Image 1: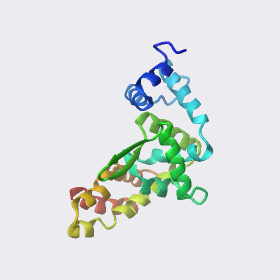
Image 2: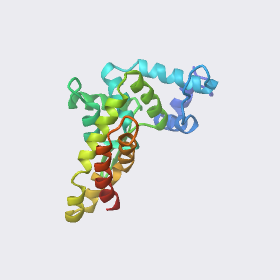
Image 3: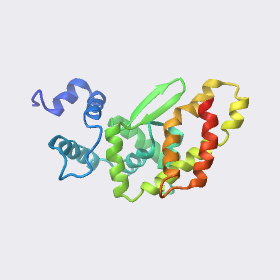
Image 4: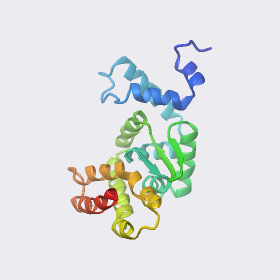
Length: 208
């Protein structure tokens, strides 16, 4: 059986989501190097490595690709950014459902729609695996392109919006993703033209 200090006992007593939240608060920043990491950081890294090794290829792919989102994202955004020619919408949705069941992705249901997010510890780990797969630049570009397109009709919607809740659901919930897209666009490997469009469209949406 488990000792009272074991992670297994805590998972049974607290539930996986609560345990992950506590781990997220305690180990918010993963060490950049395993050899120089503190013992508790190495333990967390080993635990995440083990959990990740149990994922199916499609689940691991979606998990690492979701790390490009900042804060939360909609189902449509997740499918558009994490999917590709070899991973269609149905496959992404199936993988996300499995990741939610395994408490690797958190889902929130509210009147403005279903949102998905990774805890920061999970996101940091997923970003490591994204870099190891050499997909970081491709996914950040795809992420920025998606939100550039999402925010494109913001001005027209702002002046003619009949339902402010719908406007908020479409734009304001993705403020963090807009900032992340701008960070990439004006970074060393970004696209300044996309950044300029994001600024003009995002200002209207966020001031709404």
